[in-house]
Image 1 (spheres, rainbow over the protein chains, first blue to last red):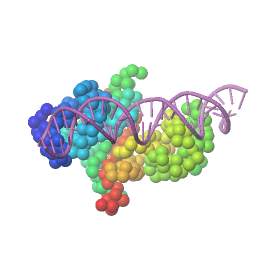
Image 2: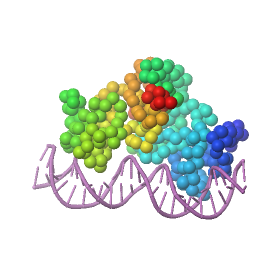
Image 3: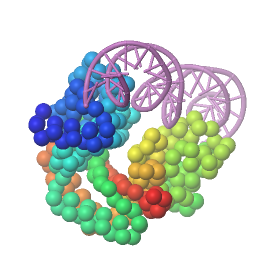
Image 4: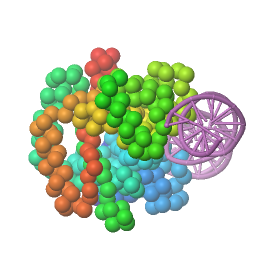
Length: 147
Length: 147
DNA sequence: CTTTCTGCAAACGATTTGCAGCAGC
DNA sequence: GCTGCTGCAAATCGTTTGCAGAAAG
């Protein structure tokens, strides 16, 4: 795991009055190695010794410490990824056939347009935007090739 | 309910080999009257005689007939809205304190930028985009005023 | 040492499903 | 009338929680 990521994680956990444990460091490393949000079964496959309940509890602790973010796809599984300020801002490609979620870089032109829209909406709706999600839903290359 | 909406719903149900029942018409009317995606409890409050299981089954039937769409927020409840080609294209404001989801019109500038980004991504990723979701997550006016 | 984390197993709760009777067509 | 919808109650399954022992600080 990269040293500065590790340092940021330790700092945020301490800031949230949470301890730094092997399980938590392993979770961060697993999410850091993946280029997409992971489901709990996928995470457990990478660390079979970890109990499901501990995985959920630690992901919650990491979420509250702003290290991890929970994202929803189109299926019944929750997915987890590192907080955006620990990675790069990105969006998601979601396959509505197999449920797979993949990261895509955010094109700068799109980001500018979103930021402008956010300003307008905050002014007109009294809504304070914390972050935005842009998801493209459709068929992934693998599912498209199957039929 | 508007006549052309009703006609479209009947046509789509028939096209999917589904029957047109009072429950299904009522569900469409409830969703049509709301200006936001609704949770199952909210739907049942509008039609207390409807059994939960029937509500879920009918929403699934309507979803398969392309009349209804399921959307996810930040909480544990699924939400349902009319298919976009039966209403207007819009995005969602999602409150991460109370979970409320509200519709917002899609600013044209934003839509153009999204369409352009979709083209680039389809070309580079072999991913076929069916539709996009732009969600703004933050604090709604009511929750902001509470504290 | 004290507090918090861990694993196990049991509980929870939104959603799904089996079944007998009723309604669309 | 046949087929598929309806309500009820039970099952399903991802996720959460209680508890006693281990580990972080």
